[in-house]
Image 1: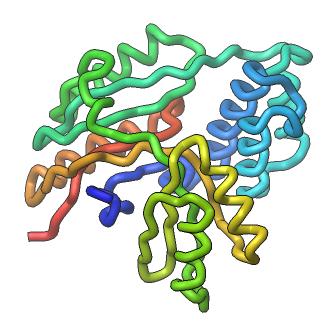
Image 2 (image 1 turned 120 degrees about the vertical axis):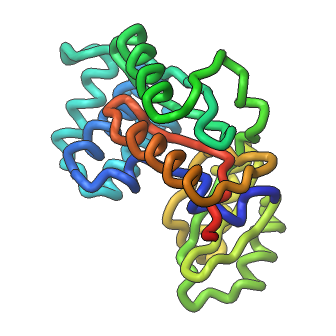
Length: 242
């Protein structure tokens, strides 16, 4: 799939970028609250909430924090109400940037996003200006430790996966958005253990970036990731060493 071989350069997730556990907990708490608000507080009937809770458990988030976030989302505890928004724009070198956020103040967040883009050589655009450059896909990750790659590939394709990519220490299986959970469960039934299974945005094509432009683009992405409201950042840059 075009652009996917440079996955580490393309998909920049907040929970992998933040070193502080407190920030990770805050981000996941917001995921839980929004999921509970939209689909109810029972993870057995709310797949999105179930996924958010699993993310919380993966980073050893205390059950007390998880339960409190659910109760805030359902309105049983008083708390801040968050909404999901997406911003789009261009960074140095013309790279496309797509940002998913959760905020309790849309106007404040919009102003702060525009300020960061302007300050670090980017340009915040209108809705839809870069979204068309990305495809929503499911990605299942499995640690590449002693796995029979051919068996996994056949199992994935038989389960309905669209693509299969092998890296040094990780194998990624690409699915259509609506078959992600089905493919994941079928792989589990075959004895494989995914480390994650989530929806993401994959660029249709990439833009090669080098030298000084790389430094500027990475700086913009870094400051965006540091923003408390940011959940996920996607870009179509392929950063190359000169």
